[in-house]
Length: 476
Image 1: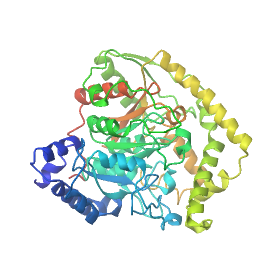
Image 2 (image 1 turned 90 degrees about the vertical axis):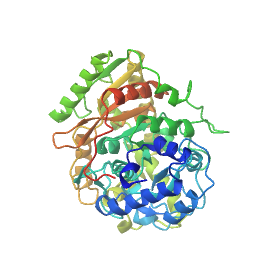
Image 3 (image 1 turned 60 degrees about the vertical axis):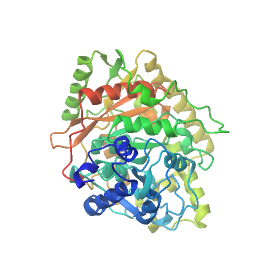
């Protein structure tokens, strides 16, 4: 396979070449390794390399799955890979090495992918940009002076640069959708419990955090969820309803959908005019496809919704850190955590049980108000972000004071978090570009457990407004 051919295929396309014996899994792994070595010095997306292990796996035998032989990268957070470090982007956790694959990693392997490394992320996935003190900034393949997003920024940068066709990510406040938007990719936040946490994972913030993949195509996103999004045996959580495979859904026309759209923000500030213009062009596109569009907000007090999770999120983070502290056997020193992380840990230990439970109750009640919109509408449309991808340093959690980070986050990331709170599915699609030539994602959110409608609509938009041939300067 020539250097050019590799990145012209998505994951399913590469697997089809393997099935037809036009290429071997080892050739694909070597092609991915070649691209890591070529591009990683510029973008800093891959922070752990397991080349020998990947080459050994490529020699087989491999599971017979939809992605047999396809190279794959794993975000260095939450998910466990046997024998690999799990730093969580932190100096404090550098010595952590997992002894076995987590349940989700086993499901990824069953799809046939070959894992060859881990990707960059902000410390403990806290920020919407990937600029950790431990690994250094991950840079956007579209413009090296700009952020690749976070917290799954390394995964998104690697996919955008053509290193792999897809990579693992996690989403707690937009951490799949935000980097997908910044890097011009498809990023789905699945419904709460769609991808089970399995017996080896503590409750990822009671479903607030979910894991899936970042891809270049809608069909790769759907095919992987068909593998991983199946019920977990003996789970105490009811699996979200699913009528049929998502690969069937993407082949099904969406029909005429009723879509609400808005640019309202919790702080009441306007988003950048070019982002509003991109949103309006998307509305025009959808109307041209026969959908009904109505400008309408979520209908809840967004400031109250965001405010209802401060103590709860902080306490959940502190609880997760307690597990890590018990594993390591000691408390972190202040110099081992970034300033924002240190402040988050100290702050997360202060709320009372009453405060935490009050906020959880508030989130549930306000979440009902969000879900009420979907009694009248099939989909809710906003941009993913309020600005184009910001410059490296603008959201730097090391150099920028925590209070300023909070203000800037409100400016850049005003849209993604509510659907983590409600558990609804939400997808970023790379439909637009900024005036500076940077990707701008549009976010489509659906009813609880209704990934099916989102996949049908996403497949239609991919056909009608394709992004396949858009390539960043750092590519392949």
